[in-house]
Image (cartoon, rainbow, N blue to C red):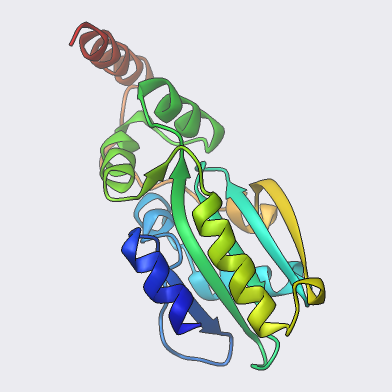
Amino acid sequence: MNFAKKYLDCYHVPFNSYSLDSSDAFVPDMGLRHSLYMDYDYKTFFSSVSNKIEENIIYRVKDTFYCSYFIFKIPYLNNSFAFAGPYHLGGINSSVLSEIISNNNLPPSRLPILERFYNNMSHFEDDRHIQNAIITLGSIIWDDIDGFEMREINDFIVDEDFLYGLKPKHNEPEDTLLSMRLLEERYDTERLI
């Protein structure tokens, strides 16, 4: 797994393993959900992920924030799995950010958090180089290319009840109409630049 980690580090794509038995904190999304939602518990997140993924399958997932990951259970370690990502396919612009805010029921005041997050993340037009590294790792872990399968999941939601039970963080009460107007003005200004 060290080869994959070093290779992905060259592209600034995080690669980590996590055990449910560990007390160590690991944040798979560079802290995004913790920044956006009150009481976000990554332990619950990992427990839910563990229940949803199967042995000998590498999942290529895209979450509701349009972040891409590869996730799989590590066969020789109990209750452990690996995460490669997040990274983003394509570009981020104001319309994509608006979609993300809308799809995740976030207030417009969360826009600066999203902008910082995406500015710090790797972006690719094509991720075949990442996928090839993960497939190579899989063929080493499972002794053969036929020892595992790949599955793709879009709009990956680990636990809908958990996610939608969360309340977005608010710095202050907002007038929704005013916030929308400010956001529209900002997009209009950005389009002129």
